[in-house]
Amino acid sequence: MRPAQEPRINLLSYLQEEAEQQHKTRLTLAILAGVAVILLVVAVSVWSNQNQQIKAWKEQNQQLKNQVEELSQVAAIAGELSDLETEELGSRQALLAELEEKRTIDPQQILDIYALSVPDITIGKMDIKDGGEITINAYTGSQAKLIKFLEKLQQEDFVKEIQRLSSKRNDKTGEIGFTLVIAGEVSSQ
Image 1 (cartoon, rainbow, N blue to C red):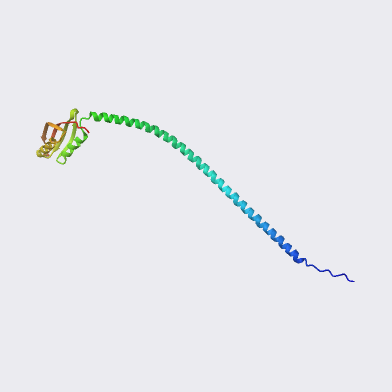
Image 2 (cartoon, one colour):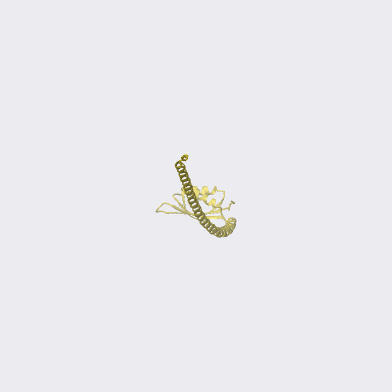
């Protein structure tokens, strides 16, 4: 008798499947390890980048603190100067108010005299004395222009009277030089 034939099992296909399975497992593990390494590299680079940015911000913050401190010192000095300037301005305003009370003539009156003289009379000098007396040294081209100027002056409210008038004609140029003394009133502002 012959031994009974045992059925043969082809293990080759199982071995191939097992080898493929192991290969797939190794490939998956290699891919996972590669992804893990890539993620680790990305995480380290992001951390390094943020760390550098934080250092830069800290340096910038320190610089800004230093600038604020410097500006605070400058502002403190400027504030002290401002107080001194304010005090000086106050004393100047007080002096100006005192001088305004003592003034002998309103500046607008002088401007009015100049306005009356244009264009016929050329005023060379004006002196103002206490009590509102005004001395005018001027010249003109003719006696008629001088008379017209005197008439205009007498019509002004601030002129009390024309006290003195002296004139002299320059024979070479034909001009008339004159000195005029006016008694004026100090007007209020």
